[in-house]
Length: 112
Image (cartoon, rainbow, N blue to C red; front, top):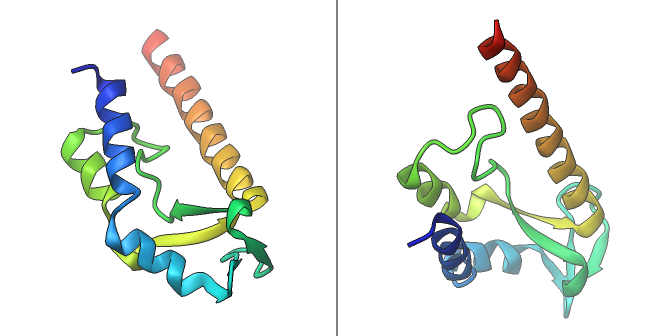
């Protein structure tokens, strides 16, 4: 099984993870409206993301192993947060920049 296939299958399975759905339910403020954990504004369901507070793949360490990946993917309710699309994008960009910077430092250290 290809690792990208396994990752996709695990991600699909996590959509039905009860703690994930409980976090969404907790963020509901009215019918079809949810509060963003960061900006505290309310948004329709299509305008939010259910985010792992602790990234599934740590930006500073990278992929450690499947056990770690699965444990972080299927976390508890309090380890999820509801973010509007904008705040989720900002968080993701920051994590990506961290990964990129750390990879560059790692590559520089290897070439020395």
